[in-house]
Length: 115
Image 1 (tube, rainbow, N blue to C red):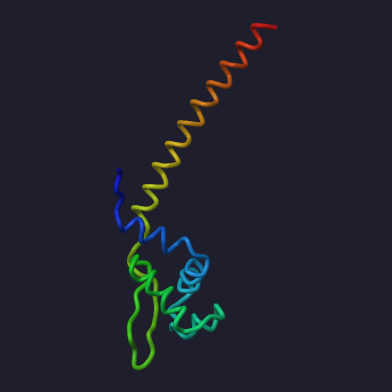
Image 2 (image 1 turned 45 degrees about the horizontal axis):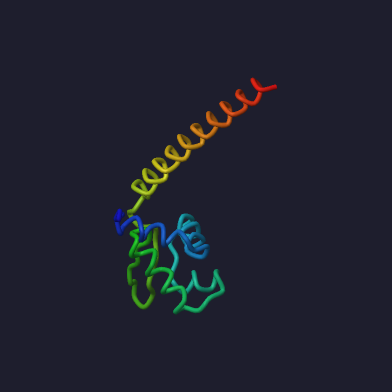
């Protein structure tokens, strides 16, 4: 069995949720407190804390306690390894579709030769 980096799993898992992707887009516009994010996404503070924890574990978000408020900002992780994995997968698919296209062309040639 092939094992992939748990970091890839963490990042793809974090990005698999629409709310978490929205949080990243929101933080791209500027830092925000967890309570502000919870309000913007119309969810409980506890729910948003869970989303932020997933993003934090993936390195996509960092948090800092400032007084009584926990401020979130984009983290240091820039998804380079994930992009490389996706590029490799895209290349694999392109090669397979090219091979399939060649098979289809060969079958069409044989069909034309019959007629």
